[in-house]
Amino acid sequence: MGNVTTTAVSAEPKHKWLSKGSRIAKKMIMGMTTACCMATMCTIQAFAATGEVDTSSFISTACTVLKSVICLIGAGVGVWGVVNLLEGYGNDNPGAKSQGMKQLMSGLGLILLAVTLVPVLQTMMTGAV
Image 1 (cartoon, one colour):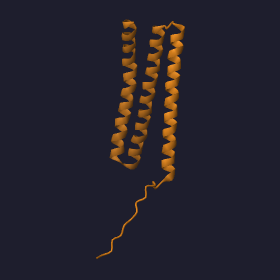
Image 2 (image 1 turned 30 degrees about the vertical axis):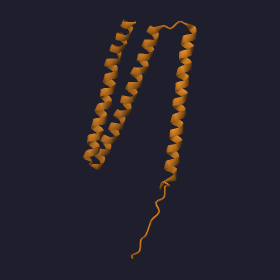
Image 3 (image 1 turned 90 degrees about the horizontal axis):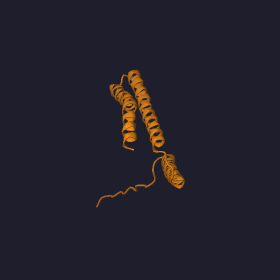
Image 4 (image 1 turned 135 degrees about the horizontal axis):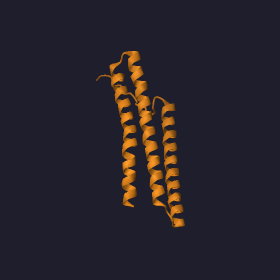
């Protein structure tokens, strides 16, 4: 009748350290998200307790933070693009060169977007209040 061999497929991952690291990263992200949500709730309650909220200073502070965050993300993407671009030139890899140029241009676009669009949003929001 023929020999039938069965192989057992283990449910364990090949690299135990990788799965353990990803579990730890998930727990850290969940904890940090929870802490940020709790801090936001406490801040909202602190503003509500005083009864006086200066909307113009809040809007200007929020726009400054938004501009800074978008510029930092754009700079990070741009630096990552420069690294990929240099890697592509070093290895004569046209795929890495193309990817690096796309990342560099998108990073510069994000910075330009933050510098031009956020002040327009700020004037719109302060005009509406």
